[in-house]
Length: 346
Image 1 (cartoon, rainbow, N blue to C red):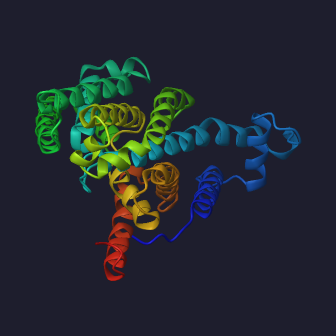
Image 2 (cartoon, rainbow, N blue to C red):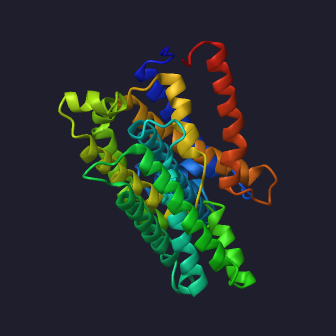
């Protein structure tokens, strides 16, 4: 595959895009804030010398610091988590269609969330629905791994089929519970399951940041082993890599990372599938470069979709889970078509 960018240009460009999109997302909305005032609020709240209160109003502080910045940070975290987890899943399982949802993460999270909503526990506090979603995702993946593991090995095909079976089972149970829910709780669950970043608070940032940042760091540090697993089981064993152990480690880390993302944003599809393929087409399959690139690109893609969703038919908001599919699918098809015509894909 051809290399179109070197690493320095790649990461400088992605970092610039992320910073620029963060500022745009903070400044634009139903209440627009001038860029100078946005920077002044950030500088003052972060205690950076040279910024003082004369450059902004208290209303602008509330809009930037209390409403939009937590939303943007959650978007960056969730996008990075989904992008990196998708790249790892596709490499470890040697399946280009793999994403975290294929082993039951999304269906497990939805099942946990619907239990919280149907039982009324979700009304007791902001953390209960995310907590139940996290537990549901972890239990679903534990069930998939239990069904797939045989004599200390995790066959890829059995793992994928187990994931499909568990997802269908949990989907049926979720649908069954929904039929008994009243209209208000049904609307609450639907609001969560479409996926969105609205009403995210600093508590959601604190809840998601530790597991996501630790998970992404570990996956990047272990990227060399993903490169070996991609070569095939026999080749990996020939260089002394215990395939089953590393496959289990990668599935566990990606599950926790994805579950932490899903529990604060709801189920957002397409990011874990499209972003790794976009980056792989642009820079190649080297995971030591691909994973950090997917983290930056995933964060950029999600907050870009969220920003466009807030502005395109304002004041009505299109939720980010819808925007990721509407914007990601055409661009993904364009890249595939261009790569095929140029002989990049083999």
